[in-house]
Image (cartoon, rainbow, N blue to C red; front, side, top):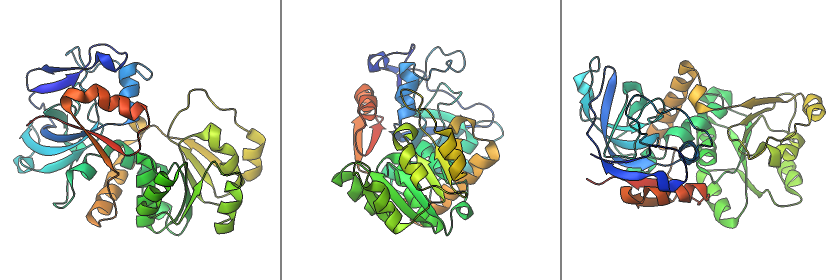
Length: 327
């Protein structure tokens, strides 16, 4: 099969597209013929060495990317034959596994290949994985955690922010989101946000307070930059959930956090306990079935241009970057 891979960390030039043996699924695994592979910031960070992890197994290479959509064409021991031919979306495909989704075929544990409703388009299915599950976990793992409350989503036009808006609305919450441009504001409104504000406005806190004086939950992408706004909208029920790191660790205003009685929590999807992750998968699946989730504008790259695709994600392109393996 053709696969994008790297044998050492570094710039995007370490990515090569090679012909390698098509892997067979082991016990408890399935093989997915990949139609589209979704690219996330975690992919280029792992490849660059910024968040390097040891290569899985003895292959000596890593096929990147966790997210994708495709059809199961082979199953390993212990997996029922009824899964053959299922169209699925994948998550955490490259976690502890050499064969991520940037290839014609990916090998994943059976539970990480989730059956899709028939009418979900490939571009949406390949975009779920890391962003949608991160959003669901930040929101509390299940709809009841935010139902009837108000959520502030920082960066509502990013992939996590986009799904956080849609999942929160699906759960029955009100959503405020911050963006930095008219283009991003349009995307956030399309996702269903009740209030969209430009975080560069000197009156952003006042604009939000006119809508709601205190929020129940913050889904935060840049704690250092946004902590003043978060605290201005926080009270004893507020939970600030941070899912992204910054180049340098912010100084925490401990006294102000104490005064607000706000809770501050940090999330990394790789370490989420299995039961909570399963709840997130269930929530995303229910929202998909209800038609509550939508795709961001897509930027599609052929597998041969995987380096350019990862560079686009690193450059914070607006929309979702997808890689298309050859047939």
